[in-house]
Image (cartoon, rainbow, N blue to C red; front, side, top):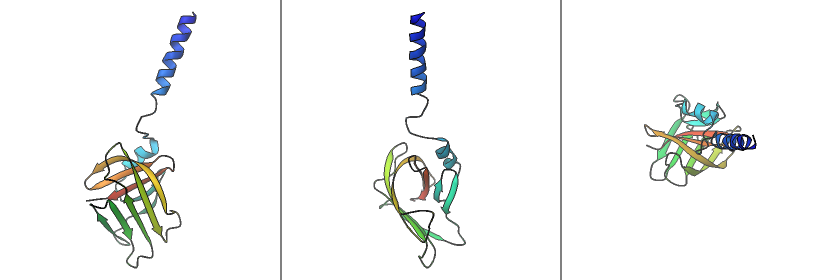
Length: 136
């Protein structure tokens, strides 16, 4: 009987230890993958996204940077990645904002979820913050 209890306990420990993905992907990061518009997302909500009628964007592939801004530059968000993004790896992202109260300037340690069609999907699990940026 003791042997069965030990085996069941060990089996339970193995199953629960493997229940979360090693890459840190969560339900919110999965929801980010369903989105396509460049911008900043918190949990599953958009905080500041690109709108062709209101903003313009710019990117620099060699500097790993992306920016959304209005024409007067009174409202903008700029993201700079420390290194080139690689899927399932973490990258330090510096986010600078102006005129956007819902998004403070901050540094993120973001997991690269996906790279596709010139865009990069990034997720910081600790801050529940996602970014979709263009680098090509």
